[in-house]
Image (cartoon, rainbow, N blue to C red):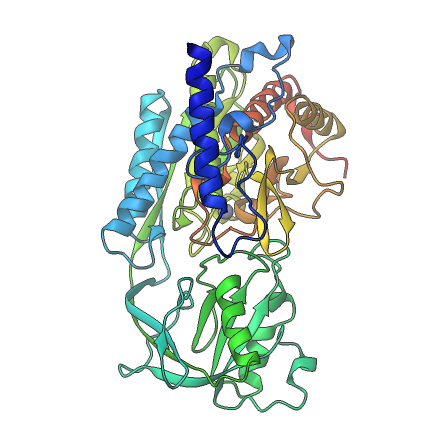
Length: 493
Ligand SMILES: [Zn+2]
């Protein structure tokens, strides 16, 4: 009876699939495999269970409480703060410095610090650059007969307002915007569309390394449209120094192909913005006391564009995982004080630079700094114009500044917990750690994927297993480093 029920259900499924596959335009049916998509949930996202999960070794059972699912829930709390900001009507939304969402995020961090019994909880307040606010924006295109919008179109971050009536320019395609692309072209008073190739994210991408935006204005272009990426349709607010706009790849290709077919297109830009001066922002610090006078500082930036799941709710989630883990260990068994810092962030603020500027006091008695920044991401692979997720965690760029003994502790821990890294170590640290990388022993892993700073930096790109493996690795590194005296952590200079 049970068997016949199953076969009836299977038959029904097959009939549904056959029904879907008999459309008049279907030459190859993508759904003719009755297995469906076993690694995806109903929304098309990779199942957490589908990720390769390295079993915890017997001797590492002390780290079992650093749990990926728990940290993913923490990440979702920060995600919700961003979504609330969006739903409040904020156009340039997220957990951006100088906004209420940022203040709410820091209150959230402080509440967590209190919940786990951190001591000496304090705020360090910084004056901010004028905070940029978008009051309204519209970007549309016109071929003479039809006005249309594109889903991924966004204004440039930090842009000044257009005239109230807006701006309208003829649109031309200009390749990657190198000097070679301008030969024989007159771009004056036109909007140029430039392809921006990520290598891999919005860091070190082609418009920056080729200086394409500045070159466009220098050639007389009136506006610059940046077509971001080589896949998908990521919405990003990259900066220009004059009038401009951003498009995802798919939308950029639509315009390119219409221009290529001989259509005459114009772009209309209208955005109204203002800045708010004299704002301040806070970093929040708290200490889990050990049994010595020495400290380990663990920092993570809390600000972020849009949902900013990888950049940097992932770092904050691992910070909370470490706080929970170490606060459950009796103080008598903890050697160095662990100072946790929810940094206000560096996207449009001072970040952790003050640690460097005030290092004699701020990092006195500090043995090591760990920066938790973009610490977990799904591994991806390009396949045609699609960035496909895989069921493994992305390897990281990495930086260690310290002794051989410290390096051995770090690499052993990376091996144990499956933290893959690039073959070559970075020549310096980036992000929050940049300015203090060589001040005292420091450590970070970081990744800067294509979705970084886009509206697609959403939780499904951050696997729970990725949070878990880096959280456990850092906990074991802290324990390993705590077996070494401070002198034995210093680099051989
Ligand atoms: Zn970051």
